[in-house]
Length: 309
Image 1 (cartoon, rainbow, N blue to C red):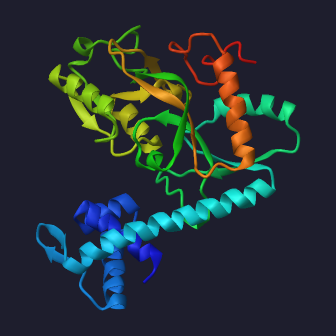
Image 2 (cartoon, rainbow, N blue to C red):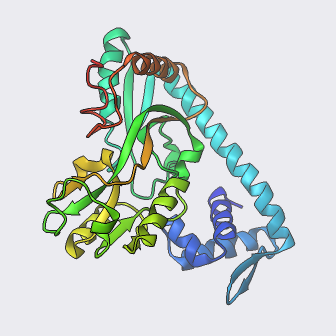
Image 3 (cartoon, one colour):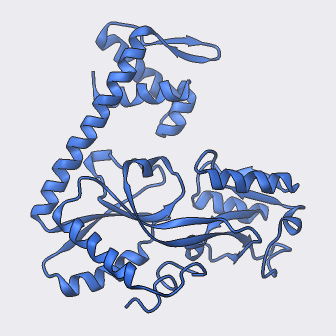
């Protein structure tokens, strides 16, 4: 019985089907089925009842689900503690970076931090679109991002820095591209791409309001470059946090009549080792000393902390 098989089984139990679990795990449904079959063979018992409508857990499957969740949680706690201890010895912070995590605020803080504290270093860990943070034991201790309810965020604590407006990215050839502000009425004839389902109550409320206003809604499966390319080709509007404006050079970023915002800041992993704790304390002091308004920032690195340096 391997941990990876347990992880796959738990995802099937959560999703209720091999196909949906495969989508979440970024593997084929046949690969999911093979892992489940191998797991059932290794323990000598049936875990799932396969039907035309999906799968259901057997009594043994229910037991393994409960114990498996505990096992996975303990495994991650052990990995996190070992990593924290290892990088504490090196005075190192591991920073997760990706397409949607540009770390502009981090580098602003880091420059001032190392000017006061010598001998500290950072190690970057690339984050792919799938955001599988536990692959090969690479678990960033710090990630700069919006707080929008993505599943990975539940495994981190959050240090709030500022608010970030939800705006619209509009292809430059779109009829609304010359607007200064978008209203629901102006968007009614067009398609609006909104966030994946069930991320946060505010995002669900925004989507519901747009749909009630008569706007055609297209739910994003995941925000990534292929999606943005699709929006550009189809002349779709796309709802994004303003912190992502730097990504979409082929779009105009236009504020909207709604007043929805994300919290923006640092996600940090427990346990917090000495280098990370020292940096977080430094950031809190810097944040609390900043008196400039941040609610109308254009970019986290450019506008939110004007005067902080």
